[in-house]
Length: 562
Image (tube, rainbow, N blue to C red; front, side, top):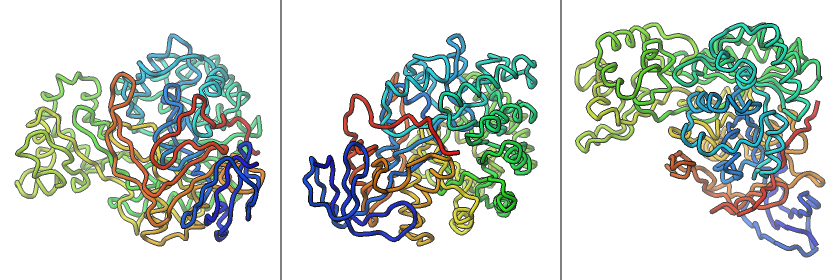
């Protein structure tokens, strides 16, 4: 007897082949038969009119802390994800000596936009070393298959403490200790090594995240461990310092694939040709036999923010004073003519790699506090400035000050033009992922990137066939990150399944949910057209709600292809 039979589904195997109308049988977590099944089963689902595909593989998430209090890793399973990689950009919580726990969480709260009280209240510390963290994940039983990066900033903090954000150069002994920790993480099943040189990555109180001040020679010393062990992938939030040439040279030195993640590769109307140059340079590297790819977002990059936490503006030097100030001091800063002039100067000469380049049409009024201002919601700051005949910097700051900084704004900076984004998605150097799931919870939720891709880029715009679209978010990302047996439907492989209606599949707008430890609120999305999600043959979501399990069915992935 089978555990599960899904009958009469349009079965997409994840490889790009056309679908087959057939049955799929599952036993003991594995796919045991694809074709007409006559044997009985504990559960039989008639999927007539629905499609069955492999679960979505999300290579770029930040569930490192959340998974210790939430084994569901919500909302990803509800949005079709069955495999997730955490520890991206080198930010996480393991390894972490006990005295450094608060330091680690404070930095994480800022760089990944997480509720600090939720982190301090919710993280369950049953580990100090990377191996102990992996053991804790196995005890927890996550709902999705989970792989973990060894993280540069995490390891730098573990070795150097708070000095990791101050001292650009470690001592020789500290560098050796960091290499040892990378080796230890790899020995305990890390998928690879992740780092960041991004100027947008600031820690608590505006201090740099540790890896962002590290030298190129330090980065090469740590990535060399991947070459020594002949395994693992390298992921980098590159900013401008981690150029494609540097990334390719690391690929050449280590023999391991590398992945660029930066807003510089996203379509930007202010500099529409910039992203294409990154893709072309990666294509040239690939032609030379060097595996250099770009983690590509298929969604518009929009941020909800207020001037009490203007995280997406902090890379402008005018906001240095904001980083080190209390909330009570902010109104005085924002009223200051000196601050406003400094901000205007920044916008006239914006640094590379920052989020906001000064186009005030890209910042809209989101939610207002005062009833008389509700008519402004949805209007851009530039539109308001034009109406009032004022400078947009003054309009922006004065509106927030009039509402005691309670105004919420929406920044729509990148990937907001389909014609500009489509070439990146279709490029051979792109790997479609970059959800940031688990991070920036107060402002956004892009965990549903896969369902968005199927609805917008496949069904609504026709840029991809359904077969090819499914391949791009299942088998291809699994193969790129050397994750074995995932992203495909085939006899003998784990039964990671997503049952959905291609005509209605999609995601909701971000919705507030007050369920964080300590009572914090986060933004989530819900799915439409999803009828069931299974991980290793076990149903984790029925399309309406999570299925309760005391120990989730997700595997802690620690073995990868070479």
